[in-house]
Image (cartoon, rainbow, N blue to C red; front, side, top):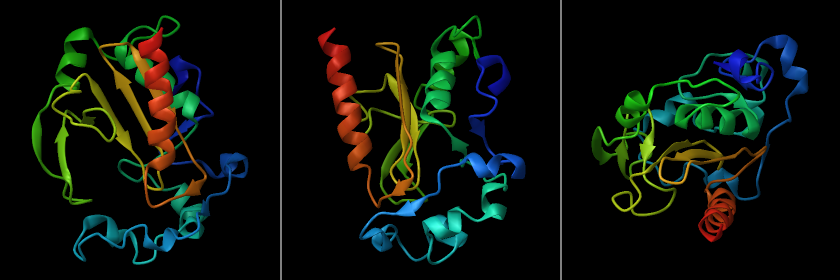
Length: 189
């Protein structure tokens, strides 16, 4: 997928050792030791380690691991990927309109087994606008990341959004603020 979109050096699931020198080093935001403090003790994400931190995520073997739902990416690359899910980007469309409807429709709802909050999921994506009522914004699908990064696509407006961070925070405040500005800008145009 990365090659046809022109993002071969920006979109990785397992970052090759030769590329690791190019990556911005992650750092923990102040008070980030509480990042997973409210999760239940048996939360699957805690199996990654009891003290998840930027130092852990910066380790070469972690960067080079093919971790499900994890990646080392630029915001530009992820936004292009979401745009190519919605339609053609420089002649490349990743999925058909029919498959897009399947991917972006609610497939299940319930309690997120990792983070413990209510969620609606499509085929691989959370359904609903970031930090909003999912039932009112089912035209949006995407995924948030550990540390506060977030990306999504809006099938109603054709807008994609991606925010990546190297300062890991225990919340999505920055992504929520920037997404609000983007969403308002789209609505105003």
